[in-house]
Image (cartoon, rainbow, N blue to C red; front, side, top):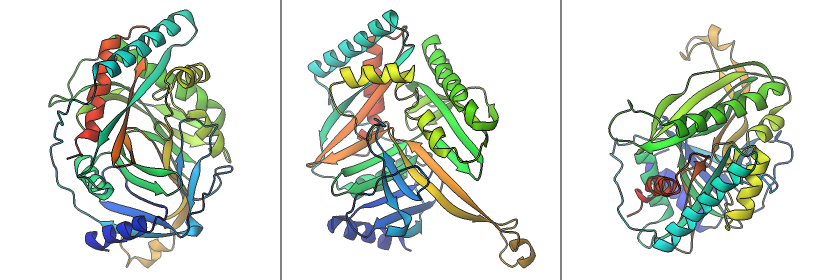
Length: 371
């Protein structure tokens, strides 16, 4: 389908106030859209369902699914310009917001030093008027600016409208093989990846890696991990380790519940950090730092991509795949305003003013696509 027709389909569905999601996986050229044919809210029961899921930060709340059997899908192959991500210099934050976040971070540090908590991820939300932007304009801009991220626009008339460009994978599963990542640490990108990381960022990333490995051990038959490496996400750098292996049968729900919320968006120990967040952030994250993506989609793979090779194509295999991403670098659109969600990991060595600056830098990911 042509790019023009693709976006016309989305616009028509959105105008009709029917649920849909459009998305592109990292470093791909195919953009997909899934259109639900009614406004029913479908809930995930045990993660055996198949379709596109959207899950909130608080796992006590329901995971929403657009079920494959109730949806139509279209795709379009698009080329994306290699645009330099612009810096939006709008002064969004006032002194009261800065003071509130600095005090929140200090409260988190004090809690860490007096409790058994190693890390707490604390966040805030910025609200920006977007009278000149439409949601599809923002989505197209995200597609162009963040080619190495999972980019999406998600809408349900009873729930809301969300967009994002997230660099973080929660879980990829193909058959029984799985891959995930630990992502933590942040500093601005200044033109190169050869940077030094301070102790606070290194420890934070190691906390995340150790948590994931320890949590997955009961559900895997094989488990490997890589050393931490520096990666770029827009105008930011992070530390990332890859974790991969083979899952035991029938444990996808357990693995998802083990991973979510990850230490990169919640903290360690998870339950203690989450309780502090829910009691002290004083706003509802909703789907920010939740997860989203394809669940239990059937895919066919052949030995040879040459369609004329009938012999090899006879050995095509059908596998069930799930590709889930953590909902970072995102915004919610409400009443012609963009609500931009940003946060950062707090440890005993954190500096409250530096944590504030980190949220200002992270806000640029979403600000850069607003006119």
